[in-house]
Image (cartoon, rainbow, N blue to C red):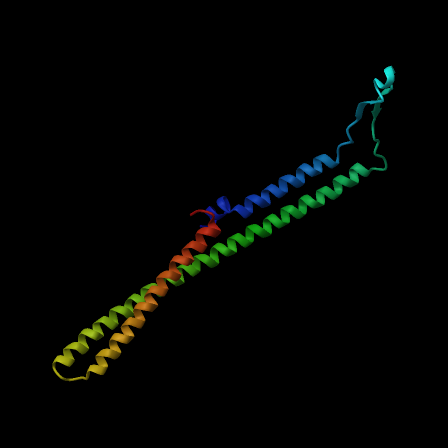
Length: 176
């Protein structure tokens, strides 16, 4: 389950994407700004005149080691993203373990509830035999039926909890 979670959990893919984005940002902030070039024209063709026209070129020059400093900041952001990714990985593993044991506990609760229902049904059969032999009262039979019905309700609840635990585990693992 842990291996499947590490391969399929969407939060881990998101964390990996954040790391890649931080690395891309690191590359980008270390590059000098792009040069600019363009054409400008105003009042062209106004009253038959050529108007104001011209071309321009420009290049921003970054000084003082600012690109290096920007890369240093971006490198720290990469480390933060990697740390957060590792934290998320540990969270996912922890959630898988917790939900796995929740499934096991729920499964055991179903087994125990089934045993209690079987005991209750055997008790009803035994009390019915005693009732036919006039060794007990009808109240005992009714009480046994009530307790067996309560055990059936507990069994239904345990089965629902077991299904819910499996769903939670599947959600953490990232596989239906």
